[in-house]
Amino acid sequence: MKLIFGILATIAACAAVAIAITVNFDVEAAPNVPRLTPTRTATPRVSPTPRATPTPPIRPVAAQGPGIMAAECRGTGANSVRVFFLWNPSRAGTQFLDLSMLNNGFAPGTFLAAGALPADRWGFVWDGLRQGSTHYVRVNTLTSEGWKPTAPFAFYTPVCDPAVYTPVAGADMITLRANIEAAIARSGINTAVAITDLRTGETIDVNGANNRLPGCTINLFVLMRVAIDLQNGR
Image (tube, rainbow, N blue to C red):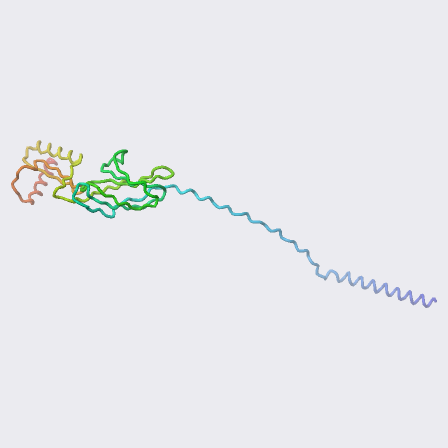
């Protein structure tokens, strides 16, 4: 029995040593085993929704122009001219084409208006304009901010019948004629003067109906030189 207990004790001791060795081995080997680091889940960041920059409102502007594509005679009467007007619309509102024969800034009651024309209208044909006369035209647009007129455009209509048409002299030409007449009277020189405005066709004269002896026009330059010298006190 003692022998059996001795063998059992020996086996138990060996088993304990083996268990101890095994435990020691596992403890020593454990540091070399890679340890899994827990993965940290990234929190998704929500980008802020971009806000659209508000577009500044487009302020209405005036049209560009107007101009003339053509002017033609439709007869020989006083009001026989047809004019084709063109311009670049601003599309900001209803348009009116204003026409006047007075250079007074389109004062109320002194001009005619064609309209209302659509906002995208770019041309107009006007009949019945007076031949051989200066006219003023503009495009006036009624926008959300009020009237937006273009700068006035001046033009001269063609003379349809030179044989019967005589343009009426304007106030500036009449004043010029009075000044020339006074200057001739002060000089005591028996002379005559006639002036024609090539832009408007207006003509004035002083003593223009008096008979004169014909002379060589080359003398005109000598007379002009004398007149300049006298004016300068020479």
